[in-house]
Image (cartoon, rainbow, N blue to C red):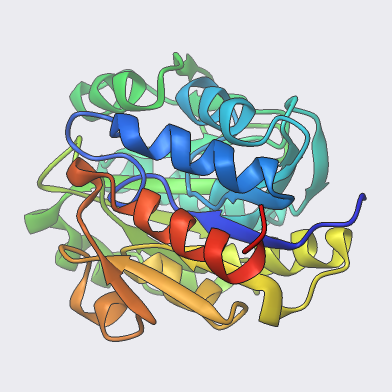
Length: 274
């Protein structure tokens, strides 16, 4: 990969994307940062299709992006750069548990397929959020998957977490939320040891960068492990308290385009003559 002055990883939901999408001022700031030789990488739980893919191409079409909660790193054009699949027996166990408990569980493949056993109300809402349609398939899915996702109302999550605790010992779980689906908890499950931090390390190695030249903007619990891989952390003021406590700088909410503030600060730090 070509030399870069540094890299900014950006979480999507609750960091870059607010209730009304991406604030217009963000695009100009990110373009200036990229033109100064700083790479920009998404770091999201979303699959690398639909709206996430569109944003990845816009912010850094020649870069690398962390999707599927770190289970996949893709190029800006959409090709898979690296991927980690969940063991088939563990995916089957969780798929059967979802049937038994009658809760929404989604599955995602390395090539971006979005699989469900039925298109229920939560899936229909999630399709709109992701900007891609789900495929209804026999359940559990027969093909290898990189990520499973519980999509549950916040009030139902504690009971499900207890009921699924034994099955979830075989995966790494990462919890998050989206301002576009308030009241819903998203719990991503990837292969053991795989997280946003795994994806961040893969991208840093590809660009031959160390943490001193890496920053991240994130807002939720699933971003905390990735914060350990960078030297500068930007967190929106309305982020999770645990994330705000880790911030190098607290930035405005995504509705106000806080990521633009992070980008402009990095422009001054890493490319002062740009």
